[in-house]
Length: 106
Image 1 (cartoon, rainbow, N blue to C red):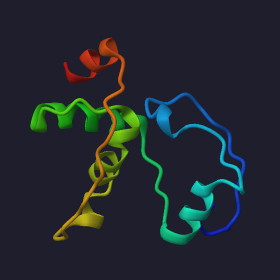
Image 2: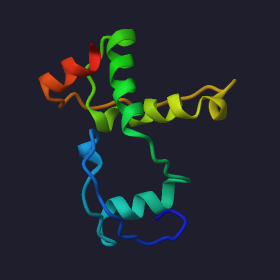
Image 3: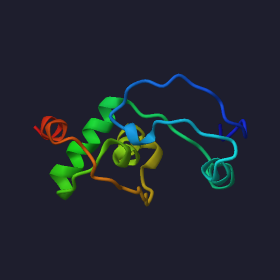
Image 4: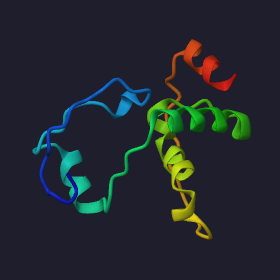
């Protein structure tokens, strides 16, 4: 989408980062902002999101939903890319099912 400068339809699959699911309309403010401010979009594995949720709880005491943990998931997957750099990741949202959260932190 960023490189193409247009909305590209893709198949959606169930994800722990359900807050990131959903269609995007070319008239949406989000689409315009992405094209203006975003350089790249990276996909992460479900297991990395789960690890990030657990890590954020164990290291920081933060309860974070899947969509809020994807930045940390990407850092975990691409450690070499970020080596010797200052990195900022936005961590947001605590809307996670209690039973799922307990499963991930154990």
